[in-house]
Image (tube, rainbow, N blue to C red; front, side, top):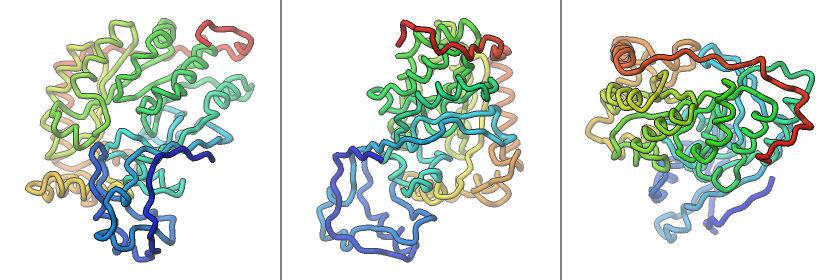
Length: 378
């Protein structure tokens, strides 16, 4: 691995083995502007954790590494086989692990623990970059073992998060998909995707791409604290218009819906998305799996102390009494009266505002022998 960082680190540390003690101390970290999480929760795979010995006696700037750290890695494979009835795709590809967008509810936070980091602040400020992702994808697509199927960019963290502006890994992945006529699906909440309209238009011309824009609501105050480094909701609606005008099939993903916070905004989101040209819509109800639970709870109590208990209980009610839910077929939809009312509001709004248009990926155009084709895009 390669490490690139401008972060500062505390010089005096101690080893804490007690989980509760560690969380209490780490919660004293300065809440950094532009980050969703307010703490670094303990990594469940780590027997030890490090934190400042006497936080009150150190300069706060030394306690929190505010700048994003880029960690380069070179995996052996790049495609993930998806074996879940909850997800409508067979393969996902994630050029980045961790996400600087900082969405406090992100279900991908626990995956950062496999890399030895916390799913709290580390998830937002330690971004793992798969430097050889493009070469690995080309190797996979040119292999005789590859049976063409749509690939999702990204099923885990946003492939258009801020670091993509400089690294352009996602752009080069799309160039490979165009070269081999490989069907690809994209979900993002970043307007950086407009940079790649030249490639997306060509993919769309052969039904090789579909894009979902994730929009959780219309309340900008909520967006700034819940998903701090994302594009504004207005910009995302305009993005749907831009993609539609370019001939790229696009839908809106209202996810996650958090009862007591943004569920009442479903009709307005779908109305605006429908006007902008969204041809389909989907939704999920929030679930707080693993480390997302303490991260979200701290955030909720800090920003909405007056309704934290109510929101928390409603989330739990949607998941059989627990805010976490791993049950296949239920975890993303929820259950019970509150979930039923959310689905009803979504279905009515979708029927009213979204002109559903069917889409099917073109699997016939795939060309395994495209390796010698020279594209002007490269």
